[in-house]
Image (cartoon, rainbow over all chains, first blue to last red; front, side, top):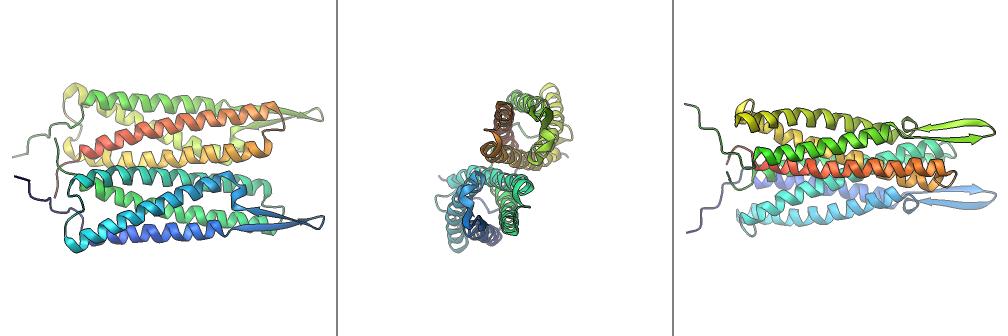
Length: 169
Length: 169
């Protein structure tokens, strides 16, 4: 006989709110990052700085996109759980949540670290050249900050999924 | 009557090995980072580049030092657990491990992200100037790589401490 489904430790609605907040932060950081450009005129030639020119920003974009895909998937699962009062795949999927949340929170943490690091050191080098570059790097801070908030929300999800693990030992 | 102590889910010896490996990785990255300097002669003036001149490397140092302090503490706890077959403070300290490992793994992840990001983009800008700068940034990669391995070991510790959580729900 199958054991009865475990009582959820955290209410699905709270989980859902955290997932949606994570998604919103990631979406805002995606929009600011991909629309970030700066122009500078040198000898009447326009030189454009785009986010793709900074390799760390490209890496940040990759982590944000992976984070959004994972968060959308988990949001769908959590809506299902909240409405049906059971998890897709039952308790075996709890391990997927557990490892997934751990991995994604670490991945996003490397992304926000990369974003802040490259912004602070490149701004030191190039921020004083033109106000356009200065704005470009200020937007880099904005993206990194939104990503950092997303990391915190993902860490909360990760705590929830750890607490919801099937009993052992 | 106090409940009987829970059977450990992961053998203390395995936990200890992972902690020691984490410590070794962090120590190696600390040594490479703090001894990393580069010199370049411009018009007979020696210009020294030290790790302190790159702000992201200073941040990396901070995360490594916090990581070492935490790992030493946990190593001491794990040795106690392995020899006495019980955890200091009993199961109430399991929550400290749980949140501590989560926080430290995320912190070290931001550190390694910062290290790789600033190295790749500063090397693009300055690596071609002299072979001394090139070597400086190659050592930056070495530090970031050791820190990344430390992140993976801390993530394993974090998985162990999540699985060892007291039963709930």
